[in-house]
Image (cartoon, rainbow, N blue to C red):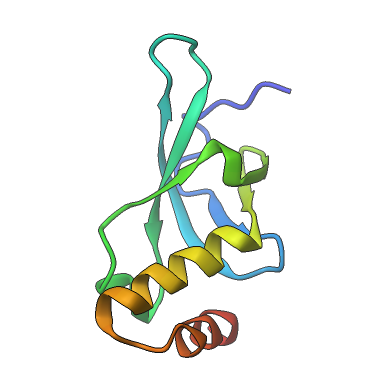
Length: 102
């Protein structure tokens, strides 16, 4: 089913298990194929101030997408938490715990 990205502005983005990631900002398309390459998301929560202004989530991590919500894999959140933790010398477990409790 086609999805109009113009209507998606501000759509919620969460993991399959319900962890809120942020809000949809825009989409990147592959210039050669026209297929979705990634979505850009404004992160939310306390950790968002430490992250980039936009998260880029590759198409392979998207489980489903409608005009009101995007669901991404739990593995995406886990790998992002681990990269964040490594960058700041924080235990990855504590970052994942914070994400699931927010």
